[in-house]
Image (cartoon, rainbow, N blue to C red; front, side, top):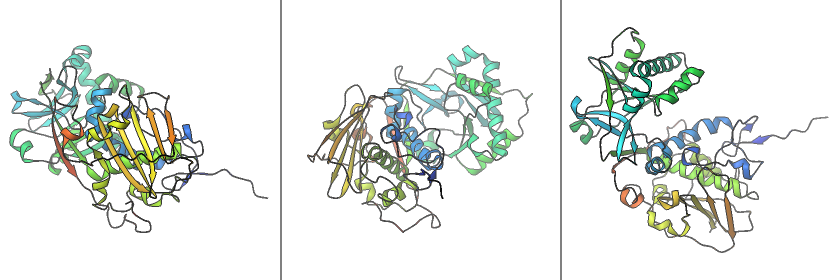
Length: 419
């Protein structure tokens, strides 16, 4: 006699889910999402491998580097991936910073700049005054050395490497030596250091030789060395923001959010690997993206999603099934940014259209369903920031997009692509 088992499968990869500490958030936490798929549909979950791997990487690209990160920083104080302050007194040195929208200025992040004549420690003036120069330096250096040591021991998640794509404007006007930094305050870094918790630091560089130089400096760090310069910054006015993101990853992240919404609110529809084979393969990067997909999926003109905008900067969505395809319209932060994704799939619900409202950092979500078809006429836009985020007027946004193709050994062709 065999015992009965209640095995759950990951809706994305189809693998068995044995234990999940925290479910897949429908909307990333970095955007104020407070509900998971299983909050609404108990039998559906995502395995830790997908949740902490590919899906997490997609969320990072969407929430920290795309246009959404600009508004998230304004509304929630979230971290924007590529924002820089300039030290004109150091030959136009670019410094890692985060925008302070209330003050229309930039706040320096804790960082070590690896100059040829010695390292520099840089940070925010208020943090330096609160911690003192020695305390600030001790926390930052010890955290960087600890992260590097764990990286050398094979623990890859302690250090993240990012090569900055150089452009004529960057190289002609500014200096960008390699650096290591953390996208949080020195206080948060100190808490993790004291508790022995992992603090992910970022190594940024322009070239492979810069990367090797930064790593050699960390490897040969002399604890008794005297820091050549300890810099503070008050923040420059009218910051310039650079949105540099991987186009395909952002499209896949928006698609993943659409799938999550269906998984949460469509209990009678097989939102899983079997029912939505093609779109799951797209999200996980198992098949290459077709160029045509970029024309029908992505950010849209902000004015086009006004009919579903919610009050109080909440996120709102319209789930529409028409002609054998799902269309997911998204209005983020009360309509400050919008998107649309479209992909084929079945509908087992008694409705064809549903409007969902998700207040920021709240579990009080609402859904209103209807059998009426209510499509929106939207214009997909990837390159024109004033049309995508017209409410952000104070920033000089530069958009750079990269498309990364799937390698031949990873690509699979045993499923239909989304259209």
